[in-house]
Amino acid sequence: MSGFPADPRLPRVYRLTITLGDGVYHATRELGRSYQTGEYLHNYALSYALGLVTADYHDAVQVPHYREHLAPLRERGVYVAPARPQQVRFVSHTFKFADTRNHVQMERSSVNVPGYGRARELAPESQFRAYLLSGEALRFPHWIRLGKWFGKAAVEVQAVSVRRGRGPFTTHHPLNPLDTELRPTLFDLINMPPVSIVDHARFDGPHLTLEDGLNIPADLGYRFP
Image (cartoon, rainbow, N blue to C red; front, side):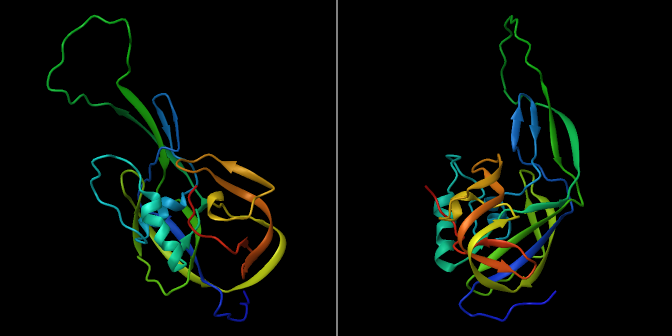
């Protein structure tokens, strides 16, 4: 794979290969008592997992602070895109809901409330690819934690050369549509909380062409409405 001539005005671009060592669960979709993990990894989750930002272990109000935590990264020119599945498998588990109340008053009821649920999660050895842009030198962890139960994952990093482009292009990598000022004209919508992402999106405007042939918007950075 031949690289492009180095341009100091362009951001550093790194290709991240993420391989799960544990099962990873996050509720992408909830259907009654069925909780399903999607096959993409959101860029907000990756930002925390890679240590680009940190959050308190305990939050008394249980309110996300994405704007507060992630907006400063844009000033540093640091940004990570969502991760695309390379090869994934899923496993499913049935679990019981625990009742931790100290006192329960017995009452007659005709409502049958099930005490169990089923969760589908990403299986170990599933693999993903993400891209990180940075205006400064970064150190990457070899191991990160992902998902609600902090599943372990290995990270391999490779620098990718890049050049500028302009005009119509299609990016075959998932993107958070809030994080570019370019508006996609055609795309696949991937429903994910807290912000749905797009894949195979078509744009028209300034972009970066990576040495592996991928095109991405040139202005990627954390943005919030």
